[in-house]
Length: 309
Image 1 (tube, helix red, strand yellow):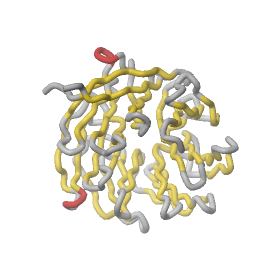
Image 2 (cartoon, one colour):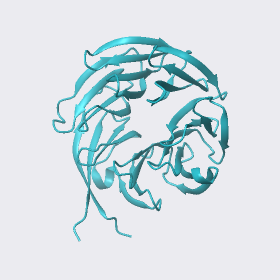
Image 3 (cartoon, helix red, strand yellow):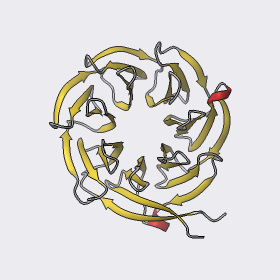
């Protein structure tokens, strides 16, 4: 089936000196943050893509960023043992919150609870009180890493993707395990709820995309061999109708969020895509632009437009 989309590479953003691991929204729809192995946290403007701005420099690799709108803070999780709280207005670190000595792989912020949830490389989940700026509790769920987190958009549930191949569904308030989802045969690097909360999507080192039906006790809805190698990240389009996956196989793929059918492959051969692993995606509400970052030290900006009939 012919794809309904045309893909155009708009920009290649350079400036990072090493692998770029993470992208995160900024307060303005046309801006976003990036960080990676060089410890640099940069802010980019899609209307002036050549002007990257350094907003922070930390002492080790950054795998996780999370924007906190109420405070205009950026949470920076680096490969050490602390969470840095960056005030974006002053570009100053307002607090360094010490955590167990493990890599920080993911951060989620529940604004109604004023809590940040932090996925740690020792298999723990840390809960940070963002009003007191201190660790409230740390609960260990696995002998292997906690790799990815997702907050259900409508229910007090938190999904954890683990390196022991499991996905745990926790009660957001008590952190009790409500469900254990098994099916992946590799580390679960990414979990993402559909915007309406009806499905949980997961991607793994096993290259599979799995879809779990949240309305039906998280029964597996479908399993798709989505990539050749590790599926690193899943991101939804601003209107929720599409989602994209990226992989160690150097490609980005765009899917229909209703049917889970593949619509487009973005790669080096066809679109001058990335030369190495594509690590994270950010789908901007600014002109529906899709942003990807890679081990090749670059960030790419893509325009997806419907073909003229």
